[in-house]
Length: 389
Image (cartoon, rainbow, N blue to C red):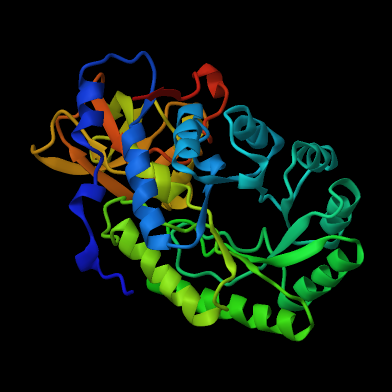
């Protein structure tokens, strides 16, 4: 199955009118993320159709709103948890331990023991000491080894910090086996916001080579965790989620044995387009009379939910009361007293010239990695509020 931009669906490009209508009918005292649960379900079903036999393990870190977890449990989703807190959240809402994987490769010993007592049997690792910790505190567990893969062209690369090399992966499998664990398979992450499924090819080749080497070394692997990377719409065309997921799975089928277990961990691709932030302009100013760019300051910034503007990697879209009027470039910044709290400066944003203090600004497709990144109150600004409809 090949995804093309002809498969792109406008209905998946922008949030439903339901979000804008809800925001228009309400006043907010602070920046607020509004989530449409029905849209989350739509995305889940679209991805599940394309992924076919792969089990969806929703990346809880993308948005841990209990209402989202509850809806996904009802839909039959599994979950990728990065911490004890996320595990407790899922279990507390009724998720079965068998549906939860502890996917963080850096875990506290007490949290491994907690997960084991709770009935979780699947853990990630990428280092010898982590294997030792899991063997000691989750005896008999299944482990999958996360591989270090080269950058794929993703807008938000996830290389270097997590994963290990081919030879080390084989040593870790042997160590796990010798310590009574079951080395079940491999995992990787192609990089968040990988807009084109063709970008997966080279990464899958790397992983397939390690899989073959593991089989030749005598390991009977049966689990492949393809991670996340499923994109959301931020202004540049992406395939429909079903077509995208189908194209990825077609590439997996070309490289890996038939009948193995496959996990996928969509986060952004599941919830980003289900959310919209209602924000407010605090100030519009120029640094001098001949300054080419206005500075537009919002009541939300990097520390209150928009951390993914770091390096201007994720380019959010904005709706203002003056859309359709003349626009000009501006530097967009947050409200805090930290000079790093600038959202877009290298590539200024075109916003209406009439924009002024007090105007409401809507930020589209913000359902992922906003509320979960928001600080508890840097500079005394309240954390991002969340409303689920």
